[in-house]
Image (cartoon, rainbow, N blue to C red; front, side, top):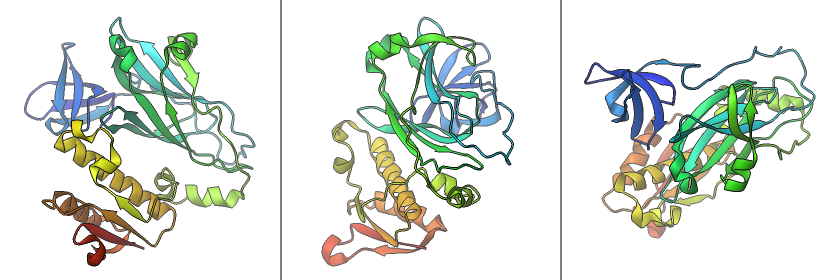
Length: 315
């Protein structure tokens, strides 16, 4: 589910548009009479994705796949546009000359939450979230990961990651009219320092032609061979987290490190989850049992970890 999706309440007649992702379990829905209500994700079902209504998403014609792109032109931008005197909408704008795969995370002191991911065409915009203007000083950081989908080129463009920190000086300095938003917005480029590495064209072509490769490339740093999932190792402010937030942080780290290990061609990786009441262990084992990229998994060396770690053998 993402901002702009049209949904219907499972146990009611109301329907509306998702206007905000509150957390991993809740969303905000604007129903037909204009009221906005918080709703658990499990209580709604998607009717359709509303393009252009809330998201303002527009797409340019798809580029000729036979054309060689010699340079990567344009930039990816973030924009904050006042919706009213109380809220700003946050947009991702792709002015690059190619589509991009993206993931966007909202980072706070308590946790890091995935709020949007997908594919954004060239010369397109997408509404990511909606933030309270009066809480400007405590707006969260945004972490982006990008893969540039060039069909043919002379230089390979590596996946790119960046963290956006909203500071007053930069925010107010970059207010201007943006044609894709049809109005004024506080806008600046977020990947202007992208560096290109010369590679053989076949490397990128092979990656883009493999269905799972584009997603795997999002996690391109090789992880450590042993990943400690104890919450105190993952979040310095873990004492302020709820049990649900702790589990979310641990499982998100597990998924990320597993994807990285597979993308980097590692043979195996060990996850240290502890014993406790086995809730985390059981959850990891349930996910591993459904993952076709896994050869097998088992308890790691008992003399070292007891029953508090799982060794995952990758295909």
